[in-house]
Structure formats: C-alpha cells, structure tokens
Length: 140
Image (cartoon, rainbow, N blue to C red; front, top):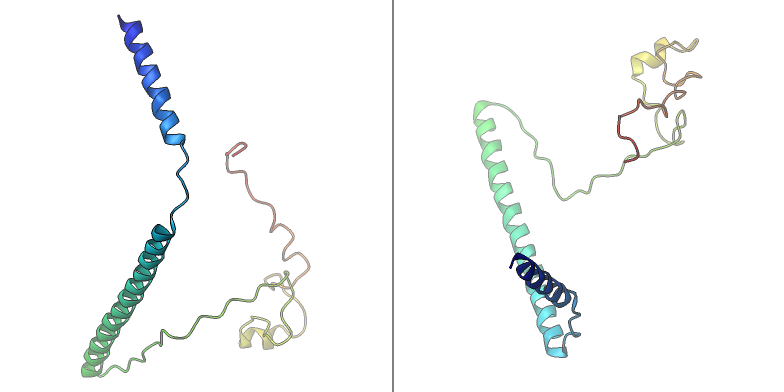
C-alpha cells in the first residue's frame, strides 16, 4: 500500500513541477500600459516619500541647532544637496600631479633629508601588500 502512495506522490510532484515551468504568454498592450502606470505611480510615491523624509530631517536638524544655540554652542549644518566626490586611487607610491603627498606638514619638514623606516614612500612600502594569510577556506 505504501508503494502505491509513493507512486501517486511522485506523479503529483512531476505534474506540479511541469506546471511551475510553464511559460506565461507576453502581456497584452492593456496590461503593459497598466504596468507602466503602476511603475510611474510607484516612482512618484518614492519621490514624495524622499521629499517628506528630507523635510523631517531638516526639522530635526533645525531643532538640534536651536538647542545647541541655546546652550551657546555654534553648530554648522552640513548641506545634503552636495554630492560627495570619489577618492582618487593610484598605484602605490604615485600621487596625482595636483594632489599633496598625504604627509602631515610637520612630518614633511622633519624628513627633508632622508627617508626613514616609517616613510610610506620607501623602497619596501608595498612589497608584502599582496600577501595575505590563508583563511582556511579551501576552494570556495
């Protein structure tokens, strides 16, 4: 009796997997238009939500600045409209022509003569940068 049940269960599973693999027909023009309208409404709702969030953040920032001003602390608001600039990455030991070397001013004046072992531009600065200890994950 259990082999009959197993056979029926296997047949049902095969039928169900065939149904899930079936391909849907392409959407009709009306369905495509409805989908485009729904996408546009979702885009407008997201924009409205973003504007409401920005207004709420502005209100919180204004309250904080007012509270700090009452305490005698000067707080400058950081504008959110500015896009952060991407960091410039270069090869080890190379810097863009218009950039600074990245050293502190007091260090620059102290190390004018020679290179010390702590200087990032010495000959062995990037020698072992590519060597990493094994993590124990074999073949993953």
